[in-house]
Amino acid sequence: GAGVSQTPSNKVTEKGKYVELRCDPISGHTALYWYRQSLGQGPEFLIYFQGTGAADDSGLPNDRFFAVRPEGSVSTLKIQRTERGDSAVYLCASSRGQGAAFFGQGTRLTVV
Amino acid sequence: RKEVEQDPGPFNVPEGATVAFNCTYSNSASQSFFWYRQDCRKEPKLLMSVYSSGNEDGRFTAQLNRASQYISLLIRDSKLSDSATYLCVVNTNAGKSTFGDGTTLTVKP
Image (tube, rainbow over all chains, first blue to last red):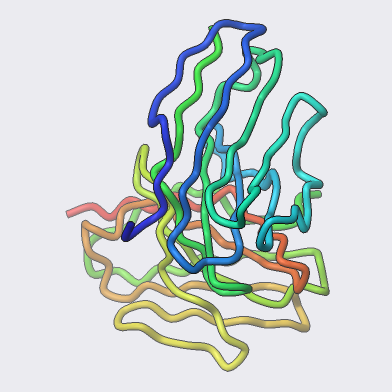
């Protein structure tokens, strides 16, 4: 596709449930980033992939969060035992190497 | 202290004004720098990269001061459509990308 695609665009889930958020990067972009953004704040770094491997996962807040990119393209962010504090917009971005990143429209996650 | 800091504003300016934003960063290993703009409830969009020599794109000028670890964005002849939040982004050579919390600009008629 022409840009970064994220699905779903909105997700409402109950506290304690498991969710998966999907990101389809721009074709040919080797780097992929996940962020989350709360109202009034800038995007908070979660994890960065270079190809299939997580080059930096220092932003994942705890072991309930996990992300994979098995074939070096599509990535899935997985959140176990969701909590109300996980509610945010989850943004995915991709780039060619160290260049500027291009964002998808985000997944708005609401945990009720 | 945050790794990337910006004055949150808001900056309220009349059309035609010149406005400048600064951003400071703490990681001296930072290698690449960008300004993004973000409209309400939208994703961030790249405005411009920031180069050591400074660079200009129309009404927008970005500068980098590595010694003082800050970058700036200057907007000349502000338009109503410039109203947005401006995010400063700093990348390390390992690829980690850190955003500031943004500066909000409102341009008024």
